[in-house]
Image (cartoon, rainbow, N blue to C red; front, side, top):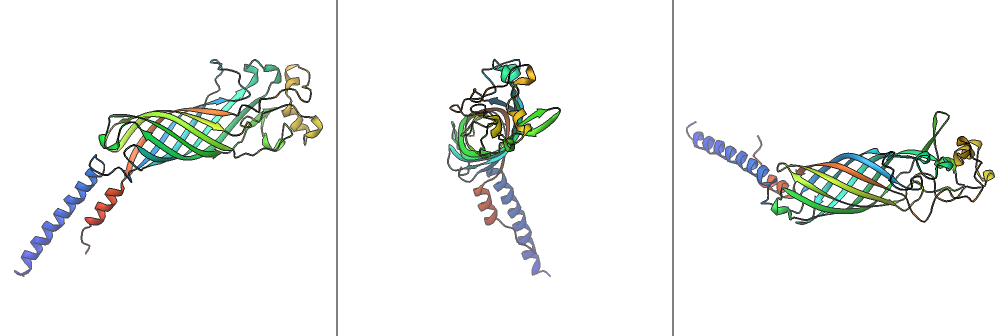
Amino acid sequence: MSRLLPFAILLFFGLVDCQNTLAQARIEGLGSHIPPRGVITIIGGAGVAYYQGDLSDGVDFAHLGLGPNLALGGLYRLSEHISLRSELRYYQLQADQKNSRNFINNLSFRTHNPDFYVGAQGDLFAFSQQAQVNPYLFGGIGTTFLNPKAQLDGTWYSLPPLTTEGVKYSRTPLLIVAGLGATLKLTDRWGLGLELCGNFLTSDYLDDASSVFPQPDQLPSDLARRLSDRSPEVGEAPRQPGFIRGNPKVKDSYIFLSVKVQYVLTTRYFAQQRKKTRCPKF
């Protein structure tokens, strides 16, 4: 028994030292004394979405038609200033021509869409500086799913299947994302920021309006004809085929203004330190 006592004492202090080393790794793993490469940050946010397309003609501050946007994504740091960035987002947009100069067409839409992109973010200040406020630029490429709807007689109808312009268009166009923001560091793990993001589509059918009114007999049903030309609902004569319904030369877009929360999840350095400081198992 007496021979085992020195061994037990050494084992006890070894375990204590192991636990202290692990705690130190957790603290250093979130500080400025680690390599920037491999830092993984979760980002989430919420804000407002603003539509820019054929059913709006300039900024009408009385009828902005704002909708919500939500986002969840992540950052993987490559260097002191550059990170890979990706987000899955959800947004709502709407517009009604009764609030525009082109009110006689009387078109309207509402949409709830997901989108996704992959890109990069460039920070103004280096990661190792741990700046209290860090402005950044970001951009990426992705896609969204188009699902414009219009209301008729109290019911909402999905417009793409009705081909209201006699055109079957892609519902998953290419999306180009570009924005800027700034993050305020709250703790080693937490950050809070404000972000402005422009989202540019290669499609002009976010609102289901792009070119001209079609020949009525080109449309598949009476419902499609009613939702294609809604001028008679406001006492106007039906639009003649070829009359302007939208401008295909200017693609649709939308803007996000969001509050973003960041949480440093882990780092490659921290994972390596954990492997080096594993405690013995019994």
